Image (tube, rainbow, N blue to C red; front, side):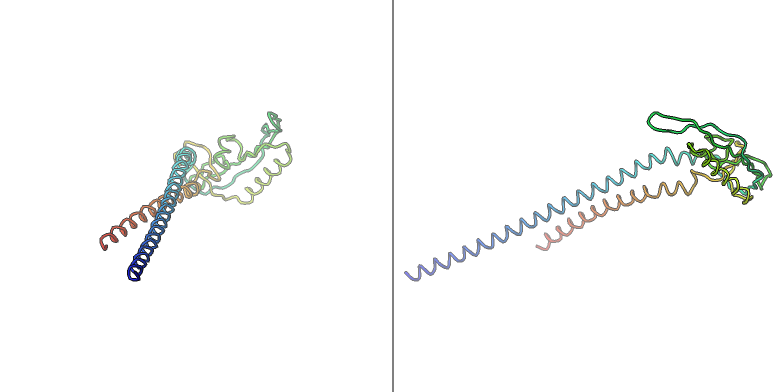
Length: 234
Protein backbone atom coordinates (compact mmCIF):
# COMPACT_ATOMS: atom_id res chain seq x y z
CA UNK A 1 0.00 0.00 0.00
CA UNK A 2 2.77 2.38 0.98
CA UNK A 3 4.90 1.40 -1.98
CA UNK A 4 2.06 1.97 -4.42
CA UNK A 5 1.32 5.35 -2.93
CA UNK A 6 4.97 6.33 -3.07
CA UNK A 7 5.32 5.36 -6.68
CA UNK A 8 2.21 7.31 -7.55
CA UNK A 9 3.57 10.38 -5.81
CA UNK A 10 6.82 10.06 -7.71
CA UNK A 11 4.96 9.85 -11.02
CA UNK A 12 2.92 12.89 -10.05
CA UNK A 13 6.02 14.92 -9.22
CA UNK A 14 7.58 13.93 -12.58
CA UNK A 15 4.43 15.02 -14.40
CA UNK A 16 4.51 18.32 -12.56
CA UNK A 17 8.12 18.78 -13.57
CA UNK A 18 7.28 18.07 -17.19
CA UNK A 19 4.37 20.50 -16.96
CA UNK A 20 6.63 23.26 -15.56
CA UNK A 21 9.21 22.56 -18.26
CA UNK A 22 6.56 22.79 -20.96
CA UNK A 23 5.31 26.10 -19.55
CA UNK A 24 8.85 27.50 -19.49
CA UNK A 25 9.31 26.34 -23.08
CA UNK A 26 6.04 27.98 -24.09
CA UNK A 27 7.09 31.22 -22.43
CA UNK A 28 10.45 31.09 -24.20
CA UNK A 29 8.74 30.49 -27.54
CA UNK A 30 6.31 33.35 -26.91
CA UNK A 31 9.15 35.67 -25.92
CA UNK A 32 11.08 34.74 -29.04
CA UNK A 33 8.02 35.30 -31.19
CA UNK A 34 7.42 38.70 -29.59
CA UNK A 35 11.06 39.64 -30.11
CA UNK A 36 10.96 38.51 -33.75
CA UNK A 37 7.71 40.42 -34.31
CA UNK A 38 9.15 43.58 -32.74
CA UNK A 39 12.31 43.27 -34.81
CA UNK A 40 10.27 42.70 -37.95
CA UNK A 41 8.16 45.80 -37.28
CA UNK A 42 11.31 47.87 -36.62
CA UNK A 43 12.91 46.64 -39.82
CA UNK A 44 9.80 47.48 -41.83
CA UNK A 45 9.75 50.99 -40.37
CA UNK A 46 13.44 51.47 -41.10
CA UNK A 47 12.99 50.33 -44.70
CA UNK A 48 9.98 52.64 -45.06
CA UNK A 49 12.05 55.53 -43.70
CA UNK A 50 14.88 54.78 -46.12
CA UNK A 51 12.53 54.58 -49.09
CA UNK A 52 10.87 57.85 -48.06
CA UNK A 53 14.26 59.58 -47.86
CA UNK A 54 15.22 58.26 -51.30
CA UNK A 55 11.88 59.35 -52.79
CA UNK A 56 12.23 62.81 -51.23
CA UNK A 57 15.76 63.22 -52.60
CA UNK A 58 14.65 62.15 -56.09
CA UNK A 59 11.84 64.74 -55.99
CA UNK A 60 14.29 67.42 -54.86
CA UNK A 61 16.66 66.47 -57.68
CA UNK A 62 13.79 66.84 -60.14
CA UNK A 63 12.75 70.25 -58.81
CA UNK A 64 16.30 71.56 -58.64
CA UNK A 65 17.07 70.11 -62.06
CA UNK A 66 14.36 72.17 -63.76
CA UNK A 67 15.13 75.34 -61.76
CA UNK A 68 18.62 75.79 -60.35
CA UNK A 69 20.66 73.42 -62.53
CA UNK A 70 18.85 74.42 -65.71
CA UNK A 71 19.35 78.12 -65.01
CA UNK A 72 23.03 77.45 -64.26
CA UNK A 73 23.52 75.54 -67.52
CA UNK A 74 21.65 78.18 -69.57
CA UNK A 75 23.59 81.09 -68.08
CA UNK A 76 26.05 82.76 -70.46
CA UNK A 77 27.85 84.83 -67.81
CA UNK A 78 30.46 82.21 -67.00
CA UNK A 79 33.78 84.04 -67.31
CA UNK A 80 35.05 85.83 -64.22
CA UNK A 81 37.19 88.88 -64.84
CA UNK A 82 38.23 92.18 -63.28
CA UNK A 83 36.27 95.32 -64.13
CA UNK A 84 36.90 98.99 -63.59
CA UNK A 85 33.90 101.12 -62.59
CA UNK A 86 33.69 104.08 -64.95
CA UNK A 87 30.55 105.81 -63.72
CA UNK A 88 27.65 105.16 -61.40
CA UNK A 89 24.80 107.64 -61.79
CA UNK A 90 21.04 107.79 -61.37
CA UNK A 91 19.57 108.36 -64.82
CA UNK A 92 15.80 108.28 -64.33
CA UNK A 93 12.91 107.01 -62.25
CA UNK A 94 11.07 103.79 -63.02
CA UNK A 95 7.42 103.21 -62.21
CA UNK A 96 6.54 100.16 -60.14
CA UNK A 97 3.57 98.76 -58.22
CA UNK A 98 3.36 97.34 -54.70
CA UNK A 99 0.67 95.38 -52.90
CA UNK A 100 -1.42 97.23 -50.33
CA UNK A 101 -3.70 94.33 -49.43
CA UNK A 102 -5.93 91.74 -51.01
CA UNK A 103 -6.39 92.68 -54.70
CA UNK A 104 -5.04 96.15 -53.93
CA UNK A 105 -2.12 97.62 -55.87
CA UNK A 106 -0.64 101.10 -55.76
CA UNK A 107 2.00 102.76 -57.89
CA UNK A 108 5.37 104.04 -56.78
CA UNK A 109 8.80 104.81 -58.25
CA UNK A 110 12.40 103.84 -57.73
CA UNK A 111 15.57 105.50 -59.05
CA UNK A 112 17.32 103.73 -61.92
CA UNK A 113 21.02 103.44 -61.21
CA UNK A 114 23.16 102.87 -64.30
CA UNK A 115 26.68 101.52 -63.89
CA UNK A 116 29.22 101.18 -66.70
CA UNK A 117 32.43 99.23 -66.33
CA UNK A 118 35.48 98.58 -68.45
CA UNK A 119 36.72 95.01 -68.83
CA UNK A 120 40.40 94.94 -67.90
CA UNK A 121 41.09 92.01 -70.22
CA UNK A 122 39.75 93.61 -73.39
CA UNK A 123 39.02 97.25 -72.51
CA UNK A 124 35.42 96.88 -73.68
CA UNK A 125 32.85 99.11 -71.95
CA UNK A 126 29.67 97.29 -70.88
CA UNK A 127 26.71 97.92 -68.62
CA UNK A 128 26.87 96.25 -65.19
CA UNK A 129 23.89 94.52 -63.53
CA UNK A 130 23.66 93.23 -60.00
CA UNK A 131 22.55 89.67 -60.91
CA UNK A 132 20.44 87.68 -63.35
CA UNK A 133 17.15 88.87 -61.87
CA UNK A 134 18.07 92.54 -62.27
CA UNK A 135 19.20 91.83 -65.84
CA UNK A 136 15.89 90.13 -66.70
CA UNK A 137 13.70 92.70 -64.90
CA UNK A 138 15.31 95.86 -66.22
CA UNK A 139 18.67 95.55 -68.03
CA UNK A 140 19.19 99.32 -68.00
CA UNK A 141 19.28 99.53 -64.19
CA UNK A 142 22.05 98.06 -62.06
CA UNK A 143 19.78 97.17 -59.14
CA UNK A 144 15.99 96.74 -59.05
CA UNK A 145 14.75 97.11 -55.46
CA UNK A 146 11.52 95.71 -54.16
CA UNK A 147 8.80 98.26 -54.84
CA UNK A 148 7.75 100.11 -51.68
CA UNK A 149 5.49 102.93 -50.69
CA UNK A 150 8.38 104.90 -49.18
CA UNK A 151 10.31 106.37 -52.10
CA UNK A 152 12.94 107.92 -49.83
CA UNK A 153 13.90 104.51 -48.45
CA UNK A 154 14.48 103.10 -51.93
CA UNK A 155 16.40 106.22 -52.94
CA UNK A 156 18.67 105.87 -49.88
CA UNK A 157 19.42 102.22 -50.73
CA UNK A 158 20.31 103.08 -54.32
CA UNK A 159 22.54 105.98 -53.27
CA UNK A 160 24.42 103.76 -50.81
CA UNK A 161 25.06 101.22 -53.57
CA UNK A 162 26.27 103.97 -55.90
CA UNK A 163 28.69 105.39 -53.34
CA UNK A 164 30.07 101.95 -52.53
CA UNK A 165 30.74 101.21 -56.21
CA UNK A 166 32.50 104.54 -56.64
CA UNK A 167 34.82 103.85 -53.71
CA UNK A 168 35.70 100.33 -54.85
CA UNK A 169 36.45 101.13 -58.53
CA UNK A 170 37.91 97.65 -59.18
CA UNK A 171 35.34 94.84 -58.89
CA UNK A 172 35.07 91.24 -60.01
CA UNK A 173 32.35 90.68 -62.59
CA UNK A 174 31.03 87.90 -64.80
CA UNK A 175 30.94 88.30 -68.57
CA UNK A 176 29.82 86.33 -71.59
CA UNK A 177 32.86 84.72 -73.25
CA UNK A 178 30.88 84.37 -76.47
CA UNK A 179 30.19 88.14 -76.44
CA UNK A 180 26.50 87.58 -77.15
CA UNK A 181 25.59 89.88 -74.24
CA UNK A 182 26.83 93.46 -74.01
CA UNK A 183 26.51 93.48 -70.22
CA UNK A 184 28.23 92.04 -67.17
CA UNK A 185 27.03 90.75 -63.79
CA UNK A 186 28.42 91.64 -60.39
CA UNK A 187 27.14 88.43 -58.76
CA UNK A 188 25.55 85.20 -60.00
CA UNK A 189 22.48 83.68 -58.39
CA UNK A 190 22.95 80.39 -60.20
CA UNK A 191 26.69 79.91 -59.74
CA UNK A 192 28.65 76.79 -58.91
CA UNK A 193 28.56 77.44 -55.18
CA UNK A 194 24.77 77.92 -55.21
CA UNK A 195 24.26 74.74 -57.24
CA UNK A 196 26.55 72.80 -54.87
CA UNK A 197 24.68 73.98 -51.76
CA UNK A 198 21.31 73.24 -53.34
CA UNK A 199 22.34 69.68 -54.28
CA UNK A 200 24.23 68.94 -51.04
CA UNK A 201 21.27 68.12 -48.77
CA UNK A 202 19.33 65.98 -51.29
CA UNK A 203 22.53 64.03 -51.86
CA UNK A 204 22.96 63.51 -48.11
CA UNK A 205 19.34 62.38 -47.86
CA UNK A 206 19.80 59.93 -50.73
CA UNK A 207 22.96 58.47 -49.20
CA UNK A 208 21.34 58.26 -45.76
CA UNK A 209 18.28 56.43 -47.08
CA UNK A 210 20.45 54.00 -49.04
CA UNK A 211 22.60 53.28 -45.97
CA UNK A 212 19.53 52.63 -43.81
CA UNK A 213 18.11 50.10 -46.28
CA UNK A 214 21.53 48.46 -46.74
CA UNK A 215 22.01 48.12 -42.97
CA UNK A 216 18.57 46.54 -42.53
CA UNK A 217 19.22 44.06 -45.34
CA UNK A 218 22.65 43.26 -43.90
CA UNK A 219 21.11 42.65 -40.46
CA UNK A 220 18.51 40.32 -41.95
CA UNK A 221 21.19 38.41 -43.86
CA UNK A 222 23.36 38.00 -40.75
CA UNK A 223 20.40 36.80 -38.67
CA UNK A 224 19.56 34.18 -41.31
CA UNK A 225 23.18 33.03 -41.38
CA UNK A 226 23.30 32.75 -37.58
CA UNK A 227 20.08 30.73 -37.57
CA UNK A 228 21.46 28.34 -40.20
CA UNK A 229 24.69 27.89 -38.24
CA UNK A 230 22.70 27.19 -35.09
CA UNK A 231 20.67 24.51 -36.87
CA UNK A 232 23.84 22.84 -38.19
CA UNK A 233 25.34 22.70 -34.69
CA UNK A 234 22.18 21.11 -33.32
